[in-house]
Length: 151
Image (cartoon, rainbow, N blue to C red; front, side, top):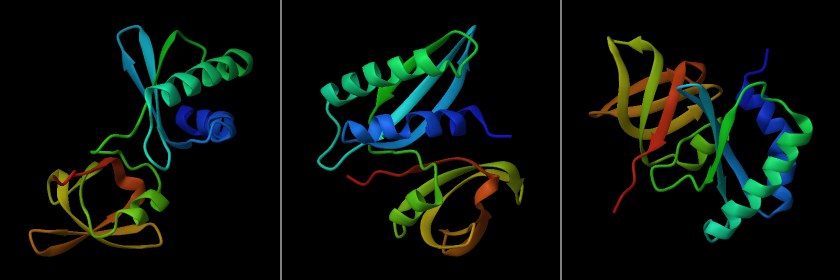
């Protein structure tokens, strides 16, 4: 069964692309009685406030018609930012050689949070160099991951 994020991605992908943006990812989080649906968009040259507003209007219209969310929700549209979250293996591939932090669903060596340099991806396995030692993670066990920005 597909998650809400996967269903929303299928429904909204083409609408976001029609506006010249890439749908980077979707997060759904409960905050009290409301669900927050957060869309991350990206595009060459960076995302502007106008891009976010245009995508928000378009996505709101699509969600009104499709009605995939049965409860009250707040819609947020933003750029992924410098500490961008990673959602797909293709996105991880783009950040090989950079430092990332991953939060695991099931702990490995009594740890859920790991930070290191993303070395390689083979199939659905990611190798992260942590304190000089390679650590291998299954993509499906990663709950959340973000790029560590360099200044």
